[in-house]
Length: 93
Image (tube, rainbow, N blue to C red; front, side):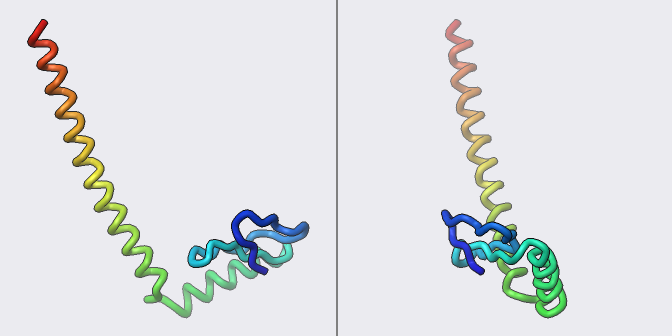
């Protein structure tokens, strides 16, 4: 059963996995949700070793690292500007 964002999970059901593509959660009866999640993870592990989700993870990781580098560069620029302004203020005193 799919539950979309903002909806309540019915009593007796538990989270099995989150669907990123349509922003929904798949739920099953409580004892079965964990078992079905394990089966799904096993299916992905065995049947799709070079699958799309691994490419998506690699693309995300690459983009995250590039964004982190750019953010650190911007932070260095801000810190250097602030330190220059502090030095100028100290020179005036």
